Length: 107
Length: 113
Image 1 (tube, each protein chain N blue to C red):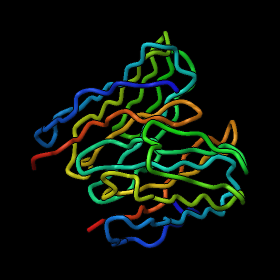
Image 2 (image 1 turned 135 degrees about the vertical axis):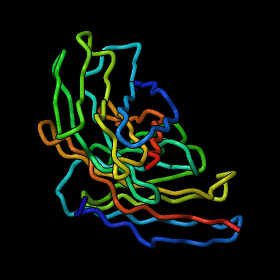
Image 3 (image 1 turned 180 degrees about the vertical axis):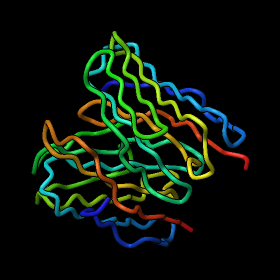
C-alpha cells in the first residue's frame, strides 16, 4: 500500500501562533485525508483532498494537496487551546496513516 | 462519529489467552479496518476488509486474526502469538467511492497482564 511520511512529529506553539503539518509520499496519491485525534479519543475525519493543487478551508484550517499529488499540508492560523491533539494524514484504499503530528498549545 | 461500536472499552486478559475484540457498524459500509495504537504513537494497520468474506493483511498482522462473515461485523482476535498485545485498538469503516470518509469506533484498550 501507499505510505506517507508526516512531519514534524511534535509541535509546541504559543496560543495565537500558526501551525503547519506536512505529509509526503514518494508516489502519486489518489487522494489524501486528514484526521484529528484529541488526547484519549479516536481519530475524527476532517477533510479529503482529491484534485491536484486543491485547497480547502475550514475556518482557521487550510488544507492543500500538491500539484504532483505527492504531498499535502494542514495549516492552522492563530492556534487556540482547542486545537490541541494529534493530526494525521491517511491515504489509499487500505487507509494507511502517517505517524501524526502532536500539537500542544500554551495559553 | 456514530454508527460504529466497539466493546468493551477496556479489556483485561492474562498472558497466553486469546481475546476477541468486537466491531459492529450500521453505516452499510463495505470496507472495515483494524488499527493498533501504542501510547504516543500513530495508527498501524493490522487487517482490512473491503467486502464480505475477504480481508487483507496490513503492516502488523502477525499474531492477529480476523473474519468478515457479515457486512456489519469485523471481529479481531488477538492470539497468544502476539508478543506485546497491550495497546489501544481502533476499528474503522469506510463507504464506497464518493463516500470515503472513514469513521472510527471509540476503541478498546487491551491490557494483558
